Length: 277
Image (cartoon, rainbow, N blue to C red):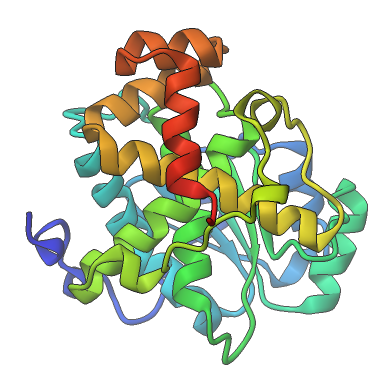
């Protein structure tokens, strides 16, 4: 597969073609979406592509999101070898370009993790983008991955898989884009033995750790798990695994049923892959 054959960015205009709110086909947004648009309501603009609706104030800082969203959608669809997206519903992306507005929005919606620069809620993505943001590509690919993979699931992924897959696939996407191995884009960072979280405990995590060090371990181990599966099995098996867990499937039974290996043997192999010696 040739990366740029997925979609030709030249077909998209250099600037976002804003459309009036009245012309947006899907105005069914959540209370969080309404809270976002209620902050400085006269400044928000709107645009759309095949699978996404964009809400933004600063056109320049939003162009990268507009240009790359469909690219990343197509890559993930190809990665999973999905023939058809059964959803016609479009996903809403709210792009903030002001720190004070972002802080105000997080307070209104009770998303107060100080380190969070974006979050997804199923069909909606909220993200902060600032001028001269040096990690824009990595962060953008990560956040877009959350809402794209949701389209292909049966329900919300458990948090550890949602974050683990977003970390993994964003590096894979950028590697393809830059014609480099994803392990060059995001080198493996192993878990110290004392910080390892047993898979049963990792799968039971229902909220993000508040402390940054704890969050780093949670993200790192979650990503390593997805990488381990992706490097050991076929992408179709990873897709089946994620879909089953998105339906509320049991982790132990799902691993044994899809990968054909005893759960405890699987965990030992994963620990050998993920934990530093």
